[in-house]
Image (tube, rainbow, N blue to C red; front, side, top):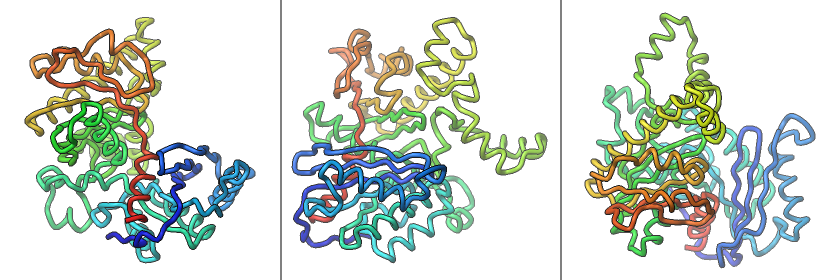
Length: 389
């Protein structure tokens, strides 16, 4: 589902909104040069002076107006909204209409913690500027290119189809941006480059990208599957859930909370901050060391699996908070993989920086890169391209 406004937009600015359950993050970008004009966050919605999302969006409008960047500016071309789940219906940026909003609401069961907040942000923004094109950019969209062999689970077909049980993947805007930026770093055409993207933040996901097209990703029906994360377990034998219910007497909600909020690094050692885990490892803490080892072991498994899926790997790109800042994770994840043509240069890897950079050796057949992600720029670019098409 897609539509445009037939190139009738004159401005070059895009306001990107990421509406969460208790916060609204925003960035205003000028697509004429990709510059960031303003950014901020309104937090603790519903807990104090910011009563609801309507009040939060009005505060955003006031903050922008105070900087001479008001929402009434003719330079504003569109509002780009991050929407977590697009299901199989939305596989590209989409101009928001009443019909589109109704379809996004139907997807709430697939993302009950995220889509409702995204929808609220859209409704409020439309009320504030009903004349302005509003575009939904979906976290799941980049992964919609996966073949059925990667996207479909081996679950009874009719049951799976009835309830939408399949692999959707998330962090799509990040994986799209990073795979493209990696090809640019190598000075090669995107269509020629096979990349394994490792988005490692508190939430973490891996993807196998062949020539700019996603062919597999680690997150599944929800963001719980895949890598070990800050508070999420990642891959788990589904029967563990039955065991916890039957033997542990735990309810569905209790198990949901356990796996999403009390597992991962936090569940293993009591910390979900890799910096603190690193500090504790330096002091010889065995729980911190084991948590790190489990985290890295899962990463290595996915790197190996996606190397097999792609057949030829040209680059591995680390991004997001842990991926961009933890030299220890990058080194440990790829240690001993020279047989696959993967060699990390210790000196390059240890250097800190905020720029896109290579950390592989000169002789490594596979380029290893650190690529700071820019999901807001990706959302703004997709929204702007749509409304000016």
